Structure formats: C-alpha cells, structure tokens
Image (cartoon, rainbow, N blue to C red):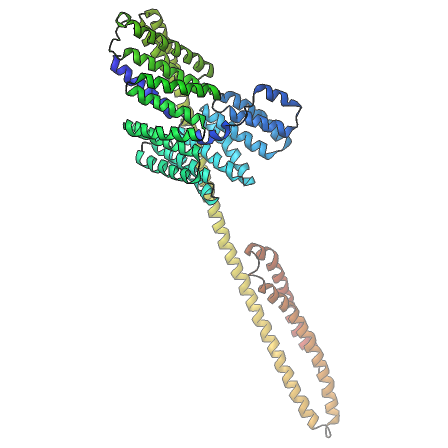
Length: 552
C-alpha cells in the first residue's frame, strides 16, 4: 500500500465512524441525563419490592444498550422473569423492549424482532402511544440493518402517523430524522436532505435542540458523503453551536469528531487534534467507552497521518526526529484504542487500528512489531469477516422465516375471507326462505281474518231483518239470537287464536333492523318459526271449529 492509498483508506474509515451514530442519538439522548444504574445498585435493590426492582433492572438494561448490550440482555431477562412472575404487564413490556434493543446492537436481528413484537402487543393493549412509537423506531432499525428499506420505512411512517395524530412534536422530529437517515443509507441523498430539512424546521419551531442538532449534523454528513466538505463544515458548526446552547454533551462530542475529520482532510492537524481531544474529554465525562475507544483510534490515526504528510513513508530512517515523536504518539493512542475495543468486543474497528499500528511500526523501523501488528490485523480481519458472514447467514434465515410467516398469514387470511363469503351467501339464502314463508303465512291469515269479518257483517244484516219481522216470526228471531251468540263466541275465540301468533311474528319483524344479523338469525328467527307454527295450528282450529260447531 502506497502513502496515498493508505491515507484514502484512513479517511474512508474515519467517515464511517462518524456516521455510525447518526440514527440512534435522538432516542438515546432522552436517557443520557438519568442516573446510571450500576451493578452495586442492582445488588442493593434485592430487599426492595418487586415493582421497584423490575424498574431498576429495566433502567439498567436500557443504559447498557450503547455500552455493554450483553449485560443489558442479562438485566432485561431478569426483569422479564420477575415481571412475568408478578404479572406486571408494564414491566414485561419494558423488558421485551430492552431485550429487543440490546439484541439489535448485537446483530441478533431475528430474536430482536420477536422481542420487539411482544413488546408492541402489550403497549398496543395499554394504548401507550409513546412506547409504541419507540418500538416502531426499533423495528424499523432491524430492517435497516437487513437492508430492507421499504419495510423499515413502513414502521417509521407508522410512527410518524401516530405522532402527527397526537401532535407529539418531539416524536415527529425524531420520525423525520429516522426517515431521512433511511434515505441517506439507501443512497437517495436528495430525499434525505428533504426530510432532514423538515426535521430542522420542526425542531426549530418546537425548540427541540437535541433533534435540531442531530438534523443539522445529518445534513452535514450527507454533504460530506457527496464530497462537499465546505457545506458539511458549515452544518457541523451549526449543529455544534445548537448542541452547546442546550449543553447536549453527546452531540457536542460527535460534532467535534466531525470537525476533527474536516480539519484532518484539510491538513490542519493541530485544529483536528484540538477538536478530537475536546470530544475525548466529553466522552470520558459521560462514560462512553465505545466513543472513547473509537476516538483514541482516530487521534492515533491523525498523528499517523501527520507523520506521513511529508511523503517519507518507506522506512524509519527517513522520518525526522520531530516526526518520530508524532509517530510515537500515534502508536500510543492506537494501542490504547485497541485495548478498549478488545474489552468491549467491538471487532469492527480493531482490524483497521492494527493495520494503522503496523504502518506506524514500519515507519518507526520496528519491523518485528510491524509484522506482529500486521498478523493481528489479518487475524481480526478474518474474525470480523467470519462474524459478518454469520450475520449474513442469520439475516438470510430471518428473511426466509419472515417471508414464510408473511405468506402463511396471507393464505390464512384468504381462506378466512372465502369461508366468510360462503357463510354470508348461505345466511342470505336462509333469510330469503324464512321471510318468503312468513309472507305466505301472513297472506293466509289476512285472507281468513277478512273472511270472518265479512261473515260477521252478513250476520248483522240477518239480525236486522229478523228484528223487522219480530212480531210475525218471534220464535224464529229467538232461534237466530241464539245462533248469533254462538257465532260471536266462535269468531271472538278464533280471532284471538289467530291474532296472538300473528302479533308475535309482526313484533319480531319490527326489531330486525335494531339487532345484528347474526343475533337476529340465532335468537329471533326460531321464535318466528314457533309463532308461524302456532298460527298454522290456529288456522286449522278455526276451520275445524267452523265445520264441527252446530250454529243452526
């Protein structure tokens, strides 16, 4: 590797580091000010009640997301077991959420998604919109890691919809930043700038300095990626100013790192190192070991670049005494960075740091250590690539399982819809049959009733005629009176017999619009059937009585 290629690889590495934290900051910042939950605090909480202990375990799990996710998983599992035992749903939901967040950092995407889905179900039942939005963010992050950007955008836009409905201004800003970073990751820089700019407008209007600083920094990252370092520097400075106004220490540190890279690109090593050391002090203050490790490597790399800018990079004897001191600093900071990175188990940066260290030893003339460092570079590079392959295999398997589950859900939904469609058709047919039968019975009943009324009118006419001939046919009149009394009794009895079931039928029909179709079919149609049978029997009785009763 010649000097120019070496410098180019270093610049690309530094750019990668500064973009690593571009998404998670807004949500993480909310927890930065909380008191840290140490192992001793957790142990001391054993005498407290279960609810308090669960809350402490969940806070500890949340605090470990960006520092030690393996410990975070342990705390979250303890919280989950205790919350399930005590049947405290909020504790269970928080534990699932923290499990998902910590597993996401460890690239265990499949189980992270399962835990987040479990958390989402509980939060939806509790209608906890704030945590629902956060869970959508985390689920979107899973699919970003899988490079499934359309699916990730679905979750981000779901979160944005809830935030807009409930006018949660801070969450709206966070959504815009997530969506913008999604477009940046997919290479659509124009849309990324559009959403980051919306984030700037929203955060400015609501006074959300954390979101404003992140949005401005992300715009700077886009311009840096596009090669426009002047605009990138302008936005980094704006972001740094806003972060300082709000005393947002993490954003201050990360923008100082960005400015350090800008100055390093310009060859202004003193200013680059000044910004880097200022950022390092902040990382030490907030206890961010991951940030410390990466920044120590950056500082070592900056010293290394400073020592090679005069073009002498072939052998240690070409390095002037002033440059040797700078080279020694590069070696010292790279070794410190490697110690921390190994302690944290962050393999991503270790190969690059070993490669830089090998180059530094080579420039120093210490070829033995240069060879050892290069061997370590090869070893860790292979380990990192093996880990990446394992992640890719896990990712492919997860995508397969996810697709299979999705297809199964679609098939089940289709079969359910078909079954419901058939049932609806059958119910409609049954309804038509019942109504048709009832109509026929009603027509028969009306016909009989009208016939009886006609007969009653005829009898009244006969009675009047008999009355007129009362003097001459007194005996006949008496007989007719007896006959009429019998007839009235029969008519009254028959009318009651018919009207009673008929009233039940009409009464039931009158409420059919006030109840659900299924309830009507199950509860009221059987009653109508019984009333119809009673009506049929009543009609038969009427006919039988009319034939059998002697009214002469």
